[in-house]
Image 1 (cartoon, helix red, strand yellow):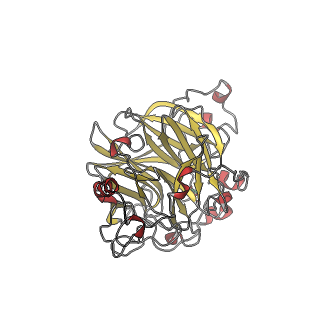
Image 2: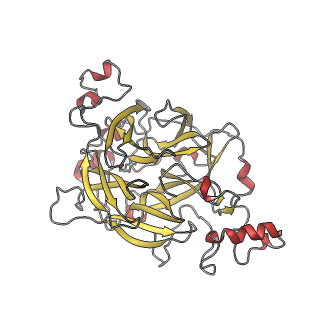
Image 3: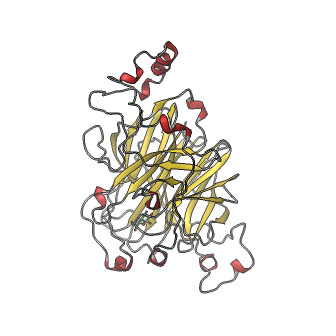
Length: 424
Ligand code: GAL
């Protein structure tokens, strides 16, 4: 049972801080996006117009229909007019196309008896979906890229199981697209990592199976005391069978090394674990991070040589204040910087929970914070909150709510976009 979620409800009380207004404030959301009918670009100089031409992939493909604005929390429709269905997701950029993978949530939301104590509602697993876009606004549905299996309810991908937070990275050596996800039983007791592969970004993905990571291996920073079995020592308890893995993410560094970040030890402690060169298994080297801090919903990205982490507290579908941290290496030490959200509703991450940070090519803001606004009693109607992620003068991530905002062109080039998902 996902006991620690209940125990930790309301345990954290991070307050919104008063970080100085970010320099991008004027540039994001205050002007209309470029495109047809945009008065702001009348009289633009020739170099600007040339730049806009170069950046045509961010220009309107169906300008009449598209407002080219992000509207956090609104129903976001795909190019067929249906609500986008990709929750707890992540975005991979590959050869100029963005692939948005996420949990398909359809059908009735129900509360299994085993989850009544902590409100763990669910829908039956209906697959991992994928959408593609070249401008991050207009998303074409590619369909279900990892399908549920029928017939045997004990299988990982059966409708009654939990499959959450799928993330896809590209392996430049094997040329495979590798998906990792949280696999669980309906009561979240299994706490496993699942892996699937595909030769093409839009699937179909072949499921390879699930496991508890790092069986029989101590984390590099385990103390002598950590290795002594005790009733409350979940690390030692799970040493032989492998460590629990619930909410998770993947991060690919510029050198091609990939890391799996996962909530472990019943959730209070996170692990960062190196993957094998083919990205299919743990490489047998990992560390405990954010010890006792109960972090979930991890998102990791790199900027100017520093590594950043954004996570949430553990309150199931209920929102809580986000937290962020910085490090000089994925291994840490991670220095917590508090809640990156500022302004009204910062204490609930604007009623949402993070899932990914996307580094954007050829436009500003350079980073987008991607979150889910969960609807606990109608999970299929959960919404998306995409917001610019900026940085204070001191280098702290800052996320402000905006009713609506737009990407703006920049001189940054695709080559400047590197670490993150292994994409290019
Ligand atoms: C959240 C978690 C979600 C899902 C949910 C279930 O804390 O981030 O991915 O597991 O709990 O209640």
